[in-house]
Length: 255
Ligand SMILES: [Mn+2]
Image (tube, rainbow, N blue to C red; front, side):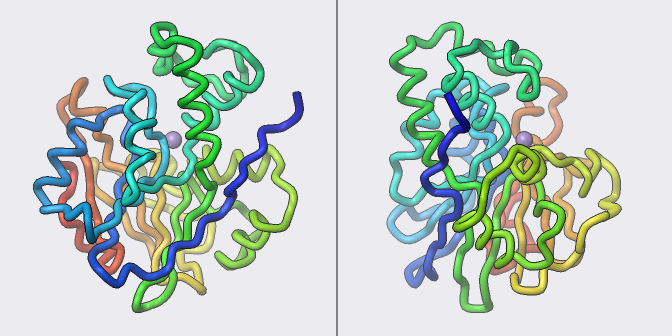
């Protein structure tokens, strides 16, 4: 079977000369709520671009909507651990829950109701997601990764060069997609890694929800996943939308 091949490990987007570049945390099947959030900031589909930080699927009601959203020319996303989990399930022809390291604890049971051919379509679009995205802005490059800049990379360029030319191994994937070291889920952002990435103006990360469901900035690193999926269960959280040109002044916070 062999490891999953990701054809676009790193994607670079030149500067958007027309409109805004907006970044959003984990969508987790909450595409209808995302639509409302985009309306609230008057998102312009012909000029603006929306970048998602991965975990498009599981937990919320509309995971399969990810297939349609990934066809939109203005919508882009990095790979999250939930996507990687489904790719492993699909690649190894196992059902969720059977793949040990990638076990997601029942958030993924919706696939029991999805036809095999539909699931294959989803896997095909998820496998195209990059592990990192770099967006050029007037003030310099902005980076995006689902969980963390893996250890051993002092700069964003060192990391993205490794994605472009080096070997992908499970430890690197684990740190980029799963690591909780940086925010340790609801701490105040005690950082073990570098708090400022020298060759970026901002690094955006999703995956872990900072304390009080508020976005957290340490140096030029910004955790903006505020738990849109939690609104259904504990009635807290929501989407945070940030213009990448103003990382510490969200357009919406936990909306
Ligand atoms: Mn995640």
